[in-house]
Length: 213
Image (cartoon, rainbow, N blue to C red; front, side, top):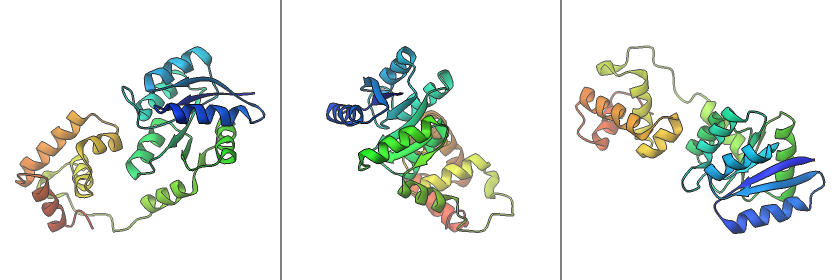
């Protein structure tokens, strides 16, 4: 019997998933949680095999909860079940330790398959998630062989590239798994080094120097 915790801030989703899983052989929902803190507490209390984890929840989001659960309760695996399939969300969740990633349009069989595969030590990613990961991993421009301009560090270059994609500080922090304060520090440093007064000028600098395609 696979023991599952459902973490989602929407009650209708929690109740629907609980009902759906209760109809499946070999699966038992042992607890539900409305945010990441409750998810961590439920894992501590019930020792589930898998958590079905939403990403965007109040107080403690799904990425943070995933990271805490994988650090404190490594036996429990995480399957992300979310409305969002954005690149930053996917990378943050997988880096935090999630072994499965589904969107909420997945059917019951897909969810149960993901739970079973992840509980057995395998990974289970929705096809669109696999496609996005392959796109991100496929080189789309040659690697820079010269030294970065204006003594920008590799981390500052990485932040600048993310700024150029339109990411907010919060999105960059999630993507890099650092605090927003750290992101602001990197941005202030690259502003000072490049002479940019704002994000628009920083993006123009990035294109002018061939740092983004």
